[in-house]
Length: 163
Image 1 (cartoon, rainbow, N blue to C red):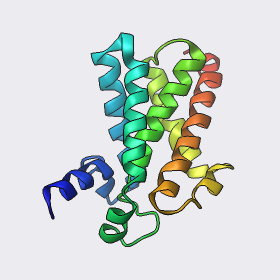
Image 2 (cartoon, rainbow, N blue to C red):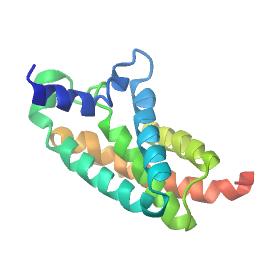
Image 3 (cartoon, helix red, strand yellow):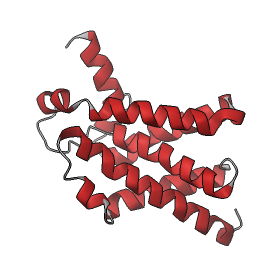
């Protein structure tokens, strides 16, 4: 495997988290949590901009990996491919922060994680339809819609639990 393919593999699997034998999507989402929390900690005044840039760059990168994914992971939506979960979690943080008008607290980060995983598994429309997009576009797009749903759900639910 070339160095470029190794870098692709590291990003697509969230540095190997997607290779978990147990719930790779859930474990892979932890890569998004680490990235989101790190960016918020490192640059609190620009966290939303940093999340936006990271999400956009990783989304485009992930969508352009169809050929690599097809030859590396012989499934239509391989479990090891968790970059979509990483970006979906960042979208969840962005939507929550935009609606709440503030950055997420630790409780909001926890809620974002669980809400994102729930909406990613539920695949409410149009998530299921977005999966039909060709190649890696379909792998990536449905999780971004799940992130929108999750961010709004956390914004609605957090005040009910005192957050």
